[in-house]
Image (cartoon, rainbow, N blue to C red):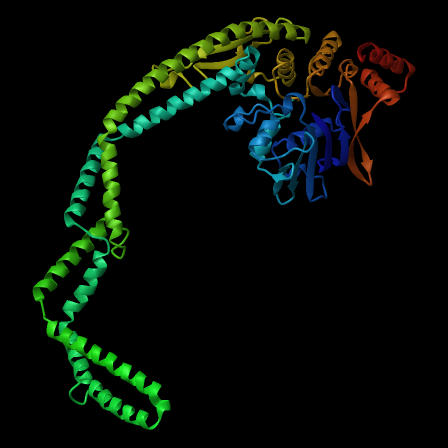
Amino acid sequence: MLEDLHIKDFALIDDAHVEFSRGFTVLSGETGAGKSLLIGALSFLLGGKSGTEQIRAGCHEATVSGTFLLDGLGAGIQAERPAQDDDECRSAAEWLFRHGIEAEGNRILLRRYVRDNGKTGAWIGDTAVTRADLAAFSAFLVDIHGQHEHQSLMKVGEHRRFLDSFAGLHERVTAFTALYADLVAKRKRLDELNADDASRAQNIEMLTFAIKEITDAKLKAGEDTALDEEETKLSSYEKLYADIAALNAALDAGGEGAVGLLKRIRGTAQHACGLDKSLEKLAQRLESAFYELDDIAGEYKQYERGLVFDPERLAQVQERQTLIYNLKKKYAASVNAPLEDVIAYAERAQAQLDAAAGGEAGKDALRAEIAAREKQVYAEAKAISAARKAAALAMAQDVEGVLAQLGMKGTRFSVSIAEKSGTELAQRCGPYGIDDIEFLISANAGEPLRGLAKIASGGELSRVMLALKTILAGSDPVETLVFDEIDTGIGGEVAVSVGSHLKKLAKNRQVLCITHLASIAVCADNQVKIEKGMNAGATQTRVFPIAADERVREIARMLSGDSDSAESLEHARSMLQRFGA
């Protein structure tokens, strides 16, 4: 339920705050006062189109905010339900739950602005949202009918929802949608398995070749690094031999090499130690250095004796390196990648090959699953279609009965249910069944039934919606209904009947209605007046609730254009006493 609306610098409204109550509220005012501006501001708040032309002249920003109470049908939520598309949410509270937005005390604030640079912004509670999210959420809160947006009757795709609500099929259709989605997923998987058998065969051949090539190479982890080191040693034999020979000459223990020199120094140190015992530790360190260097010299000598040039081994190493280079180029991220990448590729290829080998058996099982699911889906689609056809007749009779009381006597209303075209289940069935559903109407005797979405009269469209809302009052989750142009082309007893129906509908809903007719206004529980005036040389629209004598004068104005004559005032009081109770 809409509790309040705050409008600032929107069109001709500079600053207006209006509180709304439950029940039936009428919006009235002189022609041109700006009644539709209020609905336009509400439509903007609910995610309608925006533009800089909506900003009050001389201002930089237009803002609209509104507080909604999520009670009754709007607050129902089942958190255990699996996540689905927003289209399948059942209430505003469930939508908030799925998007992680918390309402405070079952209330939620919506806010939206448009600036003169074209920038817009929107919030649900404290969370910034897109226009699409705002529109999706607000669809659970308000339905606007008439010349503005949110005309769900103009969308043929919405007709199925109305019929399913009337027939009590919502839960069943939701379950069917899940079955159908499972069937679609299975078909997609089979298509993927069947996709381009030639490519699959080529892929198997490529995998087989790769596995054989890598396996035949008998690779070992880290082998590439070891080969690089060995190749460097073998290819640099002459330089290496020269370095080792030079080292051995420098370390020569029997001549003037480092070992011989250290041996002589060692003797001198021992002699000095005999003269001064404080030099003993230094002598010991020199002794250790001598033995370490003598051992190193021995190992270098041994290394030199074993150093042999092996051109045959060098050729083998380089050939192996070339093989590994080519394997990396084919199967690793780069030639500099570790050899383990090539080994891992072979393991993955084997897994893919194993999966491909078992593909036919898996395809046969999947075909069987699809065949069984198709039978289940089609049988359920036919059953839902039968239930819809039975409900469609009753729905048409109920709508025609209400329309007759709303000044559309003789109007024919029908629900067209046609099976989707196609020769296969995939073509004939959709996520909501096998039916294409559209509301048809003939507003004048002798005229053929035509699609409801093609009706030109906003008044007729609003009265059809009023009839539908009347018969669907128990199952429609939208709590606030707004009717604009509902009094187009009617008057007298028909207007009284329209007002009576709006009042009846408002027992379980909040109903807002723009009207010029006193016959409708007197049926309302509340009345809001919109008037236009001048303030500081600028045109301004004011919005404020009226009651008691002020409402009597407004009803008198609506009756005769005279809000002061005794006759008009007495007539207004009489009508309010008769129809307002």
